[in-house]
Structures are given as C-alpha cells and as structure tokens.
Amino acid sequence: MPPKRSNTLTEAELRIMRILWARGESLVSDLVSAMPESAPLAYTSVLTTVRILEQKGYVEHRQEGRAFLYSPCVAEHDASRSEVRHVLHRFFGNSREQLMLSLLGDGEITPEELQRLKDAIAEAEAAAESEEK
Image 1: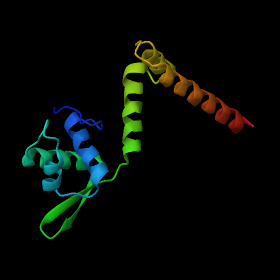
Image 2: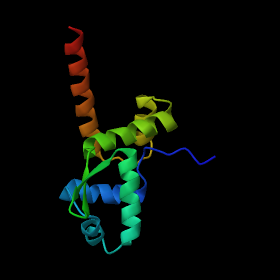
Image 3: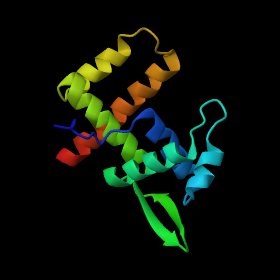
Image 4: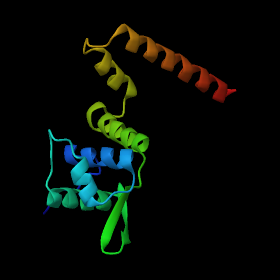
C-alpha cells in the first residue's frame, strides 16, 4: 500500500510556493529561473512538484496556448496557519500551552520577542473578554 499523502509542504514544495506567492502566476520555466542558485531544481523536478502541489490543492493552472500558467490558490498566511495546526496536533496534542512552553523553554527567545508575545497575549485576553460580554 502506498504511503498516505500529506497535505503539509515539503521543503521543495515550500520553495516553489514562496516563488508563486511572490511572483503570482508563472510558467514552470519562470519557476525554474527564479530558483535560488544555492538550491536549483531541474525543469522536470519543478514540473513534478507543481503537479503535486496542484493535487494537494495549493496550486491551480490555466492553459494559455500550449503552456500552463500556475498560480497559488492558498494564501501564504493560510498555509502557514495550516502547518502550525499540523505541528500543534502532531507534537503537542493540540495544546497551545505546550507549544508555547516548548518555544519559551528553548532559551533562545529575545526580550523583544518575549514582549511581543506578552502584548499578543494581552490583546487576546481583551478580545476574549469583549466576546464574553
């Protein structure tokens, strides 16, 4: 039996999605040209990856002449939220608290990041209180 297909993005898929989010509608040859020199991909690899992204629902295409133009159909923000939800479910049993404690416990958080988190928590508390009223 083949392995279950994941809806999360591989590194190669994410590189292509970042290009599509930045450029918008693109030919496969445009995507190949836009790949960073430090991590190039061959035309056939990009084509295969774009087709997988289309199967996963991240990309759609339209035909213009003989060429296919690919464009993202999932916003970058939505994709990142989906990936975070996946990690939250898979590693932290859907506990936001455990995720945050893990992030805070790695010792690499800066005072500025900590303050932004405190501010975000305060805003979330205020929003939750106003919803309760």
